[in-house]
Length: 121
Figure 1: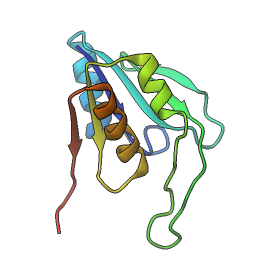
Figure 2: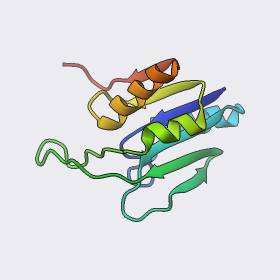
Figure 3: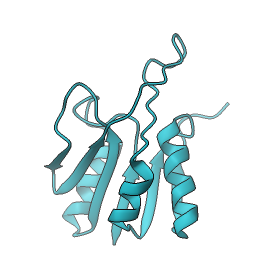
Figure 4: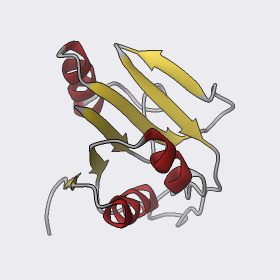
């Protein structure tokens, strides 16, 4: 299965966590995994890590000052999704624009999608 993940920040901008581990485990089971994330700090655009591909896309940081320090908008995310043509889309946290962008595009492409929600208030 071809799975595409969207997340505002990803390793090495943050520590390896469940999102990275899940991607690595699914890649080890021979699923095709692509992670779309923000290109920050001049990191290379695409790397393969633990059997899956991380695509880093440029975009502005629409920071909300004290509330959220890093709030990227990735104008190229919808086009990248269209070119990748995944079978399912997995986005992380309802609080970020990358999630909104990914889920909207998934709906337009008729793709199933899921959002991981952390905490609930």
